[in-house]
Length: 123
Image 1 (cartoon, one colour):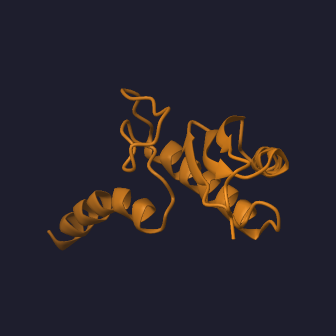
Image 2 (image 1 turned 180 degrees about the horizontal axis):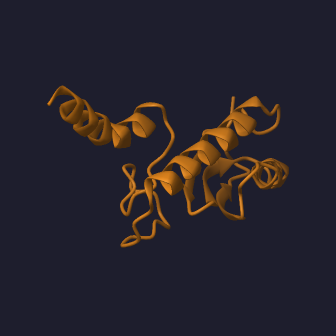
């Protein structure tokens, strides 16, 4: 009985772990209401885990980059397709974010939704 209860709790909480760690939401409706989400499709637990790992790897690359790391960019991965959201103050930063994302293992395509606002004060 304890094993079944532990399994049920683990499965119930597995969806919360990604949100708590900032891994993004790969379900049919994004938690933050991000544009471009595609509803209706369900993914296997293995695909969700893979998508969460890809999102985490992309975030780590973006945060660790000297050009892109200072921007608040959001990452969402669905079926190995990564969508990038946010605003930067120059085209070079937007292009760098896309290049970094494409270089992550497992990424099949990048949907670049990053906006460039040259009037933005990033300091």
